[in-house]
Image (cartoon, rainbow, N blue to C red; front, side, top):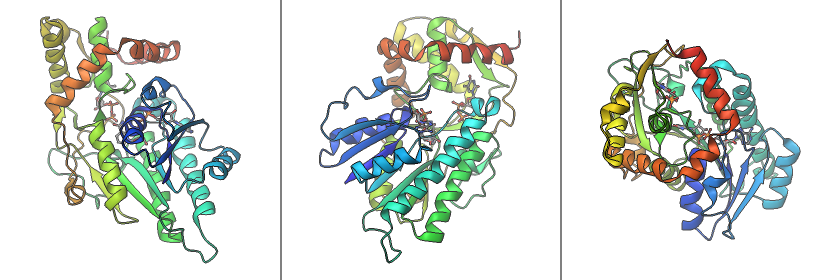
Length: 355
Ligand code: NAD
Ligand code: TYD
């Protein structure tokens, strides 16, 4: 197979490529990525020289480039990770989210339709667009209940609304044209190579640098956490066994309040560095809440598990591996702490921290 991966230099896409390029030498993987602030080619050093891997820098909305990529590589599958992915950025600067997550997805659907549809209107055997999405499209849960594949779409942020729009477009191309698609909606991921604007790496790196640990509101919001490689394995399982046109929810079955999670990170850092965890806990500050902040996400993964998938990593082992990874990869950390990132974080502090 020739598999076009979009956004493969970001967090989840690079974990996906690191796992599967090496595991499946018989498949050719093409990584199309714009290289935004969230991307890092250092994520891919393990596989960059393998003969079944090719990198193309480019924007999803660049139709002439998409034509060139299809003409040259003739991909028969696509795994679509590329997105603007950070809720806080979507609140302060939503434009890029509309552009990439909606318009970009539309361009991919069009290029797949153009290249994979045969003269009789049917789609070439074996072609597939796998759209990677989020549980945030379902909005917020109260204290009880789980998101299922039938939950109503009710997004709260420009990020989740743009992802919801992408999901609707993908589903519409299945229903209207019969384009072979699959959609997965996953809970919060964590693990190596996550850009440190997201909760877990941000807390680890701030604690190491003695900076404030900003917990939004009262830290009561609940997220369901899944180790990134378990998400990648789930995507591969759905591509092999999923029913075309269907949606599969993927979750870690590990719900934690943000404040509890931050305490656990402090405990793990204390144990790894032989220091008193209280030193890190003293850095916690409660900041003004995120506008539209969803209270709780939790996933019913039973449909996914019927395909034979289940998470391999427990949260305890996964979080410990993640903390160790950030401690042992200083060059990577320094590479992402560029000027653009520093400016963004400074702006976040000026706006949010209650002094
Ligand atoms: P990320 O922000 O780390 O990476 C996104 C990648 O997409 C970057 O490499 C970036 O350069 C690329 N990109 C952005 N705009 C582009 C464009 N116009 N053209 C080409 N490439 C572009 O994101 P992530 O955390 O790896 O998330 C990947 C996907 O998984 C997203 O679709 C996201 O919605 C979804 N998802 C993420 C999580 C999570 O916890 N991170 C959970 C569920 C679903
Ligand atoms: P985040 O990692 O941004 O993921 P998402 O918003 O997609 O769930 O945030 C996870 C949770 O942590 C969310 O409830 C917001 C909260 N949060 C903080 O309390 N402080 C922070 O500095 C960040 C980045 C997030």
